[in-house]
Amino acid sequence: MTIRVLRSRETQGNPDVALFPRKPDEGNLDWIARAIKKLKLPVGDGWSHLLLVGSNDLLSFRLRVAQSHVRTSLSPSAWSHIAFVHLVPPAQEVSVIEVSLAPIEGFGKSGFAPADNGIQSSHLGAYDDVSQFPNIAFVAMPVPAAKIEERLEEIKHMRSTFNVPELILRWLTYGWGVGVPSSPLADGYGIPGAAILEAAYAAEQFDLTPGLESRSSCPEAIWQAVRFWYRYQQDQATALSPSRRRTDVRICGAFCADNKLVPDDDAYINPPPAPKTPAPAKTRTPAKKTKPPKV
Image 1 (spheres, rainbow, N blue to C red):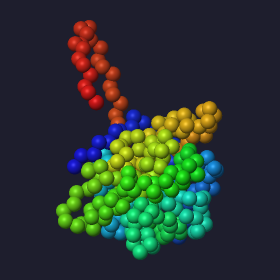
Image 2: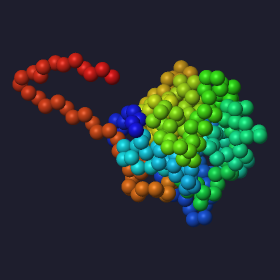
Image 3: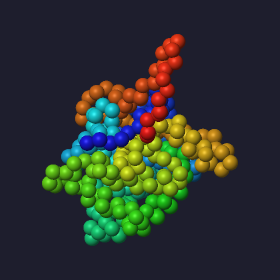
Image 4: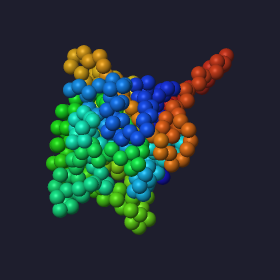
């Protein structure tokens, strides 16, 4: 199975995304609230927020392993799910917009997911249990939340062109081991929660995963972009701001990921960047020119 992934030239991870350990007996909601306050994460109108979680149940295990093919180390991802945070934590009633493969209230009314094109609304409190969701990241993106919410609402009515229930069925087939399924990522079917966010941000001219085909979007690819494509994304945000007047275009956040399926140190969270291309050796005889390869 091959998934085309471009590697960033950054030699260091995003300095505005910090490892932020939990305190003893601290729930995920309290962790988010403390991260926002301690790290001074932006929460104003010009920002939108993403929640990444990594669970330890069997379905999440298969999702995390499936994303190993977008990682250089081939180790499983720390993340099994991603969601759009509707408002600012820490209140439990804060809602999220998502496409979960194991929704608490089922797939829509009477289990009929196509009614809203598979898009679900839940509450942030559903992700508070650390024993169930040991890995967590909270990321602020310099794109207004109101615009992303509008785009997600539009996707609810776009099933003829963007069939989210098809993604749900593809991934449940894989996750449940029906037949002998291969990872849908290799066939260009992104994990649905990431795919809708990819489409919503793309509609606002913001590329969530510069190193990956958008059709194969997944939480791991979005995480890698946050960590290693942040300068590219900052340039996007600057270009999109009125008259380029916006000065704070950071991609910033916090994470805590203690649940490692394969302990491989820092590479588990921070895949190594691409090596720099060495300068050509100087020779007295000029090298014969060749045509550049087609990309």
